[in-house]
Length: 284
Image (cartoon, rainbow, N blue to C red; front, side, top):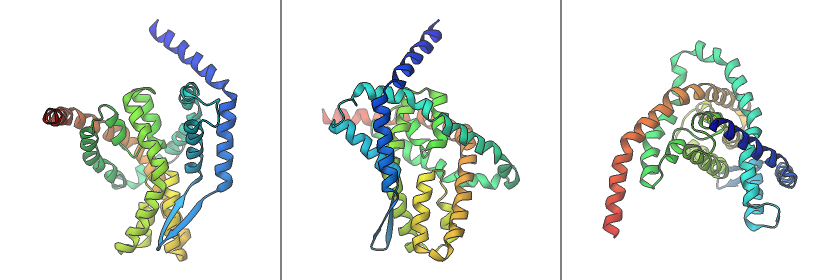
């Protein structure tokens, strides 16, 4: 009975969210404005920074919510937007699932070496999780640190922990920060590393494919500005690496990253709690 009542409540929330026509039109206008602005490339002392339309649309939507020029967007509409989000990301999740299934042969033919593409993501768990716990985060830290928090991992977190769970809230926190800061950051990072470390351009092209379409595009644009003669090759290498990261990343995330983060969380949480407890006592 409880599950039936929960389903009915979710259906009621979804029905209300669908009827928020002013909200939908406002978001559509934000998207159109962002697409009209297009991608902006800024050159600062040889460092190429790429700003994507996704960033503008997010900033516009947040500005309308915080500054209140659109009085029809309130906390209630914000709740409705979060309710309908699962419906809106459905097509994206289906696209990623189809892409993963169609390209499963890549994994089988390439062998276990291809999984090394994801070693970097696993390594960051050991670095990021203790910091998140020391900053005072709890279960949110699992969603925040178990991946790069982009679209391929979104459906897994929501399905495993639930949309309103602390893990999912932590995931979306990093997702939004990555949307705002991720593309400029990776643009600068690629440009700086390409100047400092003398690796082959193709190696940097493969490194751009981290499993995020927006970050991949930003990184490749910066790299192409440095190596214009091999732009097509860089796009090919980064595109394939990004596809592999998305395909293999789903399986590595499900079977390795989440269990690893959960286990580390159980081990580290008592330690960080004692450290934070001592700090609070010393301040008192």
